[in-house]
Image: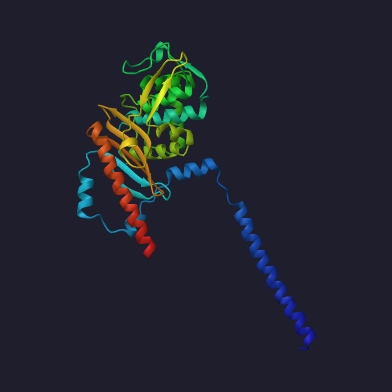
Length: 322
């Protein structure tokens, strides 16, 4: 083969190789372009439901005797504890058992009010929403919707929850349809809501796992997160009266890094708590159901959160050495 023919042959071969490489590259780009890009809402839902149940157990050795004794000392019927960014499952007990959520129900009511309500609207408390005398709001009182929402979440006000439900829909039955529709959207498959406040009702039930999804999804809303992280506020009425409102979640002031979220209690449900805490860039979410007493839900949640932070630290240390 002469030099000219040789050079032409080489150029042709290189040209076809370049074309082949370009074809593969374009196909790859086209494939990536065809992949669905998740919207912010889709990312929020995916993150709220993300749980990795194997990562911790595959890296860390089984709990020490002391850690196991700590977990065994907890009186709660059910709980689930996860690290948020990766969804690491840190601890669970009866997480799929259907139990009564008590006022953890109000997280859904708050979520729907933030999504569908106008926080600047004025809402009057009417006789038909005055369902219990343990509420601080009274018939004839008028509030901005956003203020009443804070009263419901911080003080766990049952009448405020019913008032907000009837503000958002024709009646509480219609509102529970909204609640259950949202629960289905969140893949809370073992949950059914029968009222907006969590008062005793056999048809108002959920699981620790489902409520964890709800808690995380709600906390990704900055307005919700701000409400439930507030330890105290002055609640003003439209007529210029006001009264102090202290958050029932004692962990906000008693546990380092606590950022929320909601307490619950009825005789039927026992003592419940959804909580969240952030330390050194690590955020943990915990849902605890049917603890023995109102006080034990806080002490036991603090124990579990401490345990969770230790687990995450050990996991990170182990991963860094591999």
